Image (cartoon, rainbow, N blue to C red; front, side):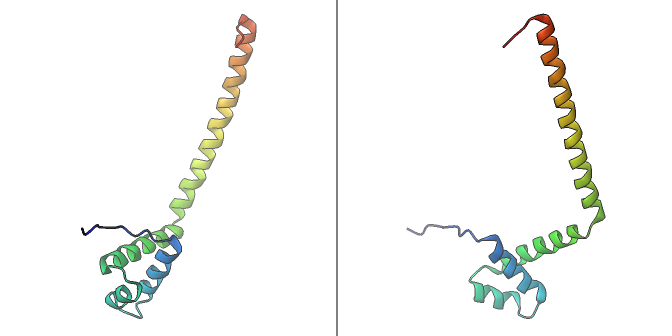
Length: 97
């Protein structure tokens, strides 16, 4: 029986392979042979790494992250305020849990 067993690679290994592919010192075929990985996988990791690097330089991404953080903080404030109001109304109405 020939079973297809998927290998799981650590992120640091993927990064190392992607960096070697980005450097273009060796061909994808040479890297595939060196790391015993399919050339398509190396190309995929290379493109993912380049996208991640590009996002790191994006000011829009940083602004979105800041906006999300601000939104989360505001929502937590609202939840806290509403919880206090609910507890107050329960106490006023004589409802206890």
